[in-house]
Image (cartoon, rainbow, N blue to C red; front, side, top):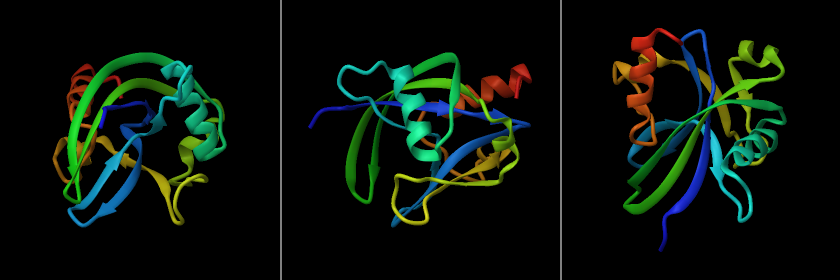
Length: 145
């Protein structure tokens, strides 16, 4: 097996982050939206495509944030990802006010929702990929949320 190349979009608004919920045997966790980088596709293009496929919406890339390497286990299976993180903004600003957004190209009942950043900073909820918490902590200190 090889690491998978992925790109995730971080959408922040009013001290909330848009995340998808995953429920496994090990428990519930959250991740930003995004997906695998296709051959010949730049990672910034990936997040734009993924948001279009998943939510049917246009996003603008604001900034490249960082690259994370994530090695993890889900239900006793190992995963290894190299993730490019981008800060995004919705072109349709009304989406910031919708609490739950249905994900179109995933399993039934998949959705993204806005959760307070503090839920992750205070460890009430689990956020992946590993290393993303460092970014949120730095943003919190800068009071840019």
